[in-house]
Length: 218
Image (cartoon, rainbow, N blue to C red; front, top):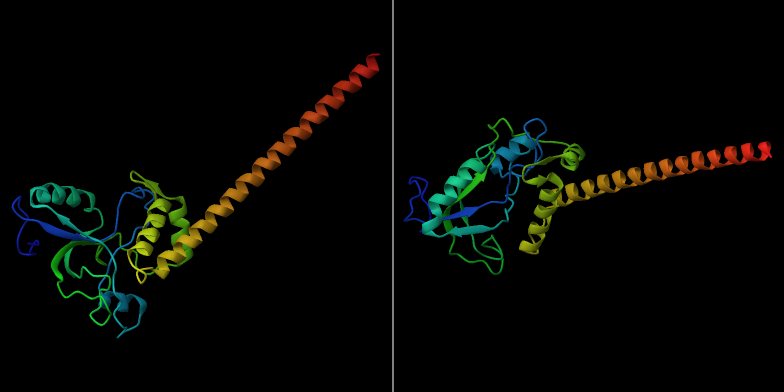
């Protein structure tokens, strides 16, 4: 049995949870960036294009045993309350989510619970420049850890799901962030080398001066 949108979960029910978004990768003063899911119509409105071919969404669904439904629901409602809303979707437990592809299984799971950030939420940012997003991710951290860790784990998870599940936008962001990390590491190394060189120069000058005084005294 799966949770019905019309019914609140109880200890006697089990439900399926779908999604791969997280929170706590930033702070209220310096929020990070996390992924969300949006409806096709909303996406078309955001990008200013219409009648685009629908794209499959890959992810993992978790079956919650009946005895843990109330506990898990209470935890998720607290963790996801700052930015996410409860929605429901059908999930196809198959290597391919498309009925036109080989390996498709028709036994879909209906009304999976999914937490998504709706465009009406104040934290929904809409269309952003990829480099701006990468800059924020590079410097953000929160109670759950580094925002970069979240991005790299998301990239890895999508690549491991199926051969078709790789997301080019996520991959591009990850590459941009790695580039920023490499640049920051290079700058730090250069600064350290400059300080070490200057320190050595000052030290050498001090020794020369001391030797000169000794020679004069003789």
